[in-house]
Length: 140
Image (cartoon, rainbow, N blue to C red):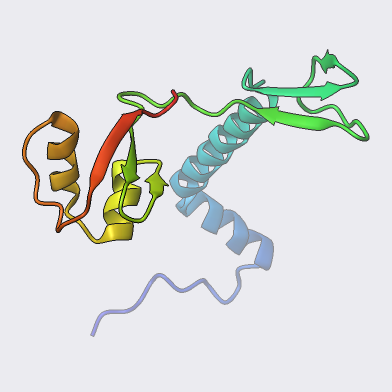
């Protein structure tokens, strides 16, 4: 039977055991310290980054810092611009109801979205008897 040598010597003091442990696991501690430093540096950089999309307005004047503490301030966020076609406005002549998009109309009337796309393209479409008309493009 082999003797286990990984256990500390009975005569070793606590300080000596800690030193030996640190020496044996030095690589693990170095990698952990590097990870901690990278994380801290990233947090500092992100906290100091200014956003051009946020304006804080008070009394008609724009405050330069987005982190300013102002009472009675209005926070104005600029929404990302939507790409592509703005969509179609659809009018149901039977129910006299307007819909803001093809998806909204399809969900409300339980019609296949593809059939509404055919209608918008000017092709024949199966609309389950609904009298629908494309009124035009939605406002961009």
